[in-house]
Image 1: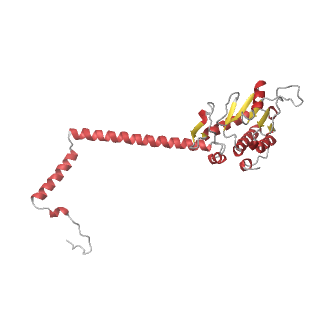
Image 2: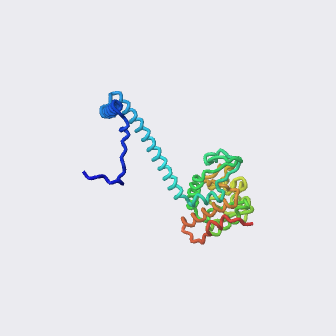
Image 3: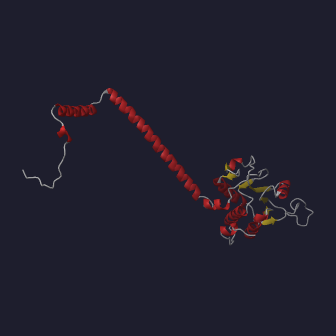
Length: 274
């Protein structure tokens, strides 16, 4: 038998320390333990089965939870991809900001309240309502629609909207009666009025409803949607937010109606101007 090399690692055997009966007992125990594993009792089998079933249930729950969360995340990502603009753009314009007052009409669209009491719109629903608004508006010819925006913060974007779409726009002041009084020189008929804020633009809203024409209304959390056939939800107090809304409406309308227009990028619509 060849002699082991001196550099070969020496293997240690802990049981070498056991003597006589101690070694026998250790060896016997090892065999019995092994035998017990190979031939378990009925009680052991039932206990093991129960443990395995419990483990299987927990594992299944974990897998189902993981798969459900994964699916939800995939749906959320897909939803974000289908948005008119990235979520970050909605956020940076503050379109989701409401007021402290929330009307019953707007409650379904409110996500939560901030610590300062301001209501917050659900951005997914903002996007959804904008899509619906674009689709609804696109059914009308430019000459059959007017936009009314008495809020000064929205004048600049509203005028650009008029320039691009051909939809007549009233800012600063809406001449009361032009939709209802046939004796007025500037009387005209329309099929749809876009109202920026029902509180400020109440005269235009009243006139439109008096002649039984349709209304599309931009609603903040403090607006009632009464009389509106279609609503768009969002912050209608801020220039950035109104600029974003008019931008998306103009872009969507021109695309749907195949109107060739040089539409500025979103940044133009939301930049601060005196």
